[in-house]
Length: 115
Image (cartoon, rainbow, N blue to C red; front, side, top):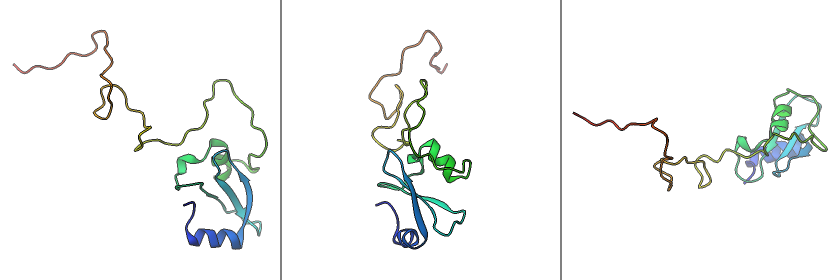
C-alpha cells in the first residue's frame, strides 16, 4: 500500500527523501527548501508506526532528521506500533476477548448479590 497516487506524484515532483526508519517508512521534505515534511509508510498507513525520534522531526520539534546511530537507553523499550484491533492486542485476564481467567486477588473484589 504505502501512499495514494496523489501522494506518490507529489513526492516524485516536489519531494526529497531525507531518511528511512527501522520499519521501512520513508521520510521526505520539499526540494525547494520549504517547510513541509511527510512520511510514506511501509505497508498500511498507520501513524503509530512512526518512532518517537522521527515524530519529533515531522512535527518540527527538531531541525535535523534522526540519521545515524541512536543512543540506547537502558530502560527504554523498542518502539511498537499500536496493536489495538489486531490479534496481538493486549487483553488482560478477565476481558471478554481474552482466553485467560481474571487474575485472583487478595479480596479487592466482592461480587454484588441482589437481596
